[in-house]
Image 1 (cartoon, rainbow, N blue to C red):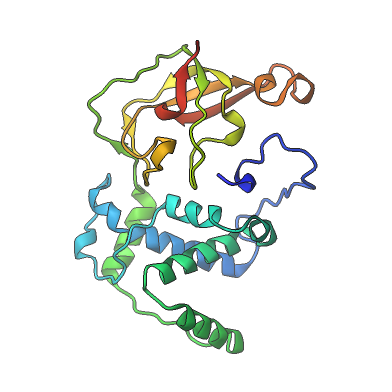
Image 2: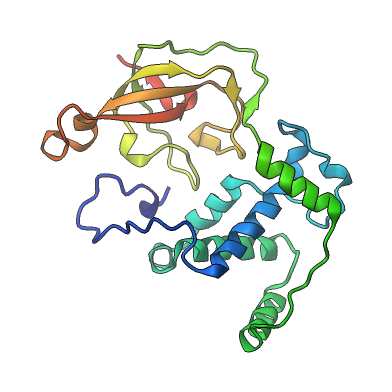
Length: 247
């Protein structure tokens, strides 16, 4: 992961935003809505839990789109751009780039339509309502997409075991916080079943179903004694690929 995605423990980064509103601007709701519709129509849902009738859905969208897709788009941004834009602006850039890369729209057509609505902000938006798609979206919002998957193996680690976080090869997208690499911890819960991740991260090690653990860390082991409050514990849910038995 690039620097901007694991800032834990770094100093002198300036003030931290404590904005509590989910949506600060009205347009942010539309970006969230577009992302939600894409997830509800994602081709991968045909093999998800619960089952969705994606193959018969009347949509031209035939790609996989998950939270991992959204995060990968943001993580691919140039760092200075990442810090310059607002949260949902990053979503918009990732979504727009995806549609162009997948061939749903050309860059020129996207630019032309954007200019059209800048000049005519009240112009009507295209609307092709489909009862089946609306039903799918509502169902997806209620039932989601579980990462729980069949798994024939057994967890390699047990509750109470001392572990050390791995230090895998850095890749474009990971679920391992950078500040936890090589840190010691203790398993405090072994979650039932096994969980897959939406994409295979290659040498990072996740993708296929595997056990997931809740791991407790002494804050001082992460930040150092002088920068940690006493008796503070940090918890993280981590895939088995990210953990090693303590030596």
